[in-house]
Length: 310
Image (cartoon, rainbow, N blue to C red; front, side, top):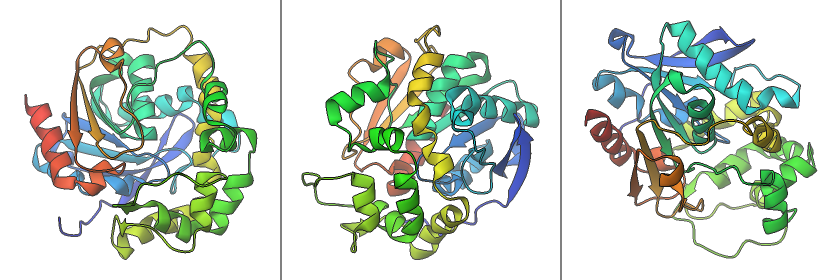
């Protein structure tokens, strides 16, 4: 295991009408930016193992807590979390640091935003590295409508949209147990029980498998969500159909050099059409679950750096 890492101190940066809490390292490498974008329900701290390796490799590393997370702004309007706003934050972050473009790395929902950034602001992206979530093809019907038909109303994407506020309140009441129960590895596979998976996880008395991180690392996530709550971050899900509409007239093909990293035990499926929409993609699969860069930090770092060095 890598030793415990001192994470950079945050600064609040005003961009795109909000303030983002940004953790920055490697300013001595100015001119070679890489931006790391976390997923849900995570935090910039989920990249703690990557920051020192990237700095040592000569990168100026910029790690925002995106809107809705940590000490970043949490607008009240649900539509303030659509793909226009989320990608606009990242483009404005480049402006703040004086960069035309950067390599962007995303995990989970962060990957969704990085895919969107490459579509909506292609000139601001030099390379794409995404973990876990492959490119999501825009089909003929809105995403939540399709998910509701395929997975039913208890699927958490659907539930977040159809029953706003219900899950938010339960997660906020059970923040520690939810995050403790969620951030696990080596969990036994089994059929999901009835009800909404995320709510069940928050209310479960005992976690399954083994902990992903130490108690002190988990405490960083817990304290952040105890302060920020969950509504801002869940509002990202509540814009999926709005995003579908916003992307209607956008060229769906991403031409940037791209690295896609999967975990072979991740519940998120690979995309059979990935190369059709991302023709310059290289795909790597690591022996892990969903929390790729935290589960397999050395392998993730090596995979990213070898690909960037080519």
